[in-house]
Length: 89
Image (cartoon, rainbow, N blue to C red):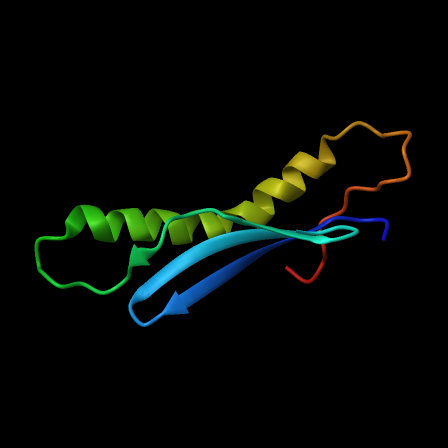
């Protein structure tokens, strides 16, 4: 394989979810990016919790663009590994 494919995985179990990031290289590498988060609202006084959840999902939405910008500014490398974001994102 001559490119790296970053991906996000959302694991859910009832009202709980966990965001994970994965990279497909010679092997698949998956890392937890968040702890298990409670996605349901159990009270009207959970503004901070809702904001934290919204910030997590906002970052998931904006990261592909940030990675593309990062890749554009990478210097050419001499090794055989070519860093390329998958076009499927």
